[in-house]
Length: 272
Image 1 (tube, helix red, strand yellow):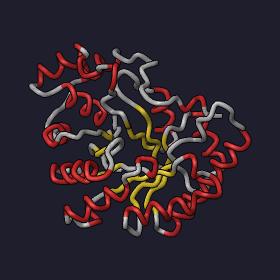
Image 2 (tube, helix red, strand yellow):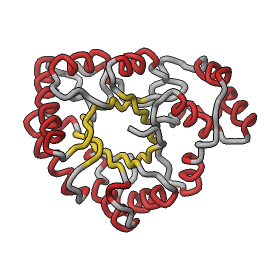
Image 3 (tube, helix red, strand yellow):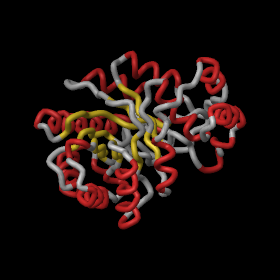
């Protein structure tokens, strides 16, 4: 997995999604992250066709939603391919380690995880998925998967940003040969991450934006970030980090802004 900034597509649908992905491809993004749950795989396909960029030059990521886990997974993968109008995806992930319902069966969840992984392994073996992995897997879920997989996961897509750095889980992934990938890489909502004075001071010192500092921080940690923006100007700005290097001192300063509990998404630790 190349250490590039990826284009997130969550939250945009229909023509808005087509235009957002087109703007991203025009800006230079070559990793496009979607999912069946986003309900925009067809829009992503349309944008790719309109951009007229060779399929081999773009890395497509999609995911199997928890409603499609278990014996539905194989069909769900084929449905995603049909919506994306492609013969293969570059990265196929299990979106969550199970249902987020309040009442869960640990045994059922485990069985559905294994069935789903077997479907991903089959997709990988047939060439339908070049790379397979997971998303939102905790250390517990990942350890379980590593115990029965025939093809180990190459990627674990996690919520990672300076307020929620997940250092222990990132280190565990790397120790097992699993590449962490960051979603919600700039956080969002009430966290107001980009207003953090540490990040702003570093940005001022380099004459860049706080967002560019955060994306550089991800890349220097060896973690490819996936970011969403509906603004063409912001998309270009977020991609323009190749000339930026943070010092060891600046990386250390950012490490200290970690809140530990700064998660903005659902907590997968609640999944049995």
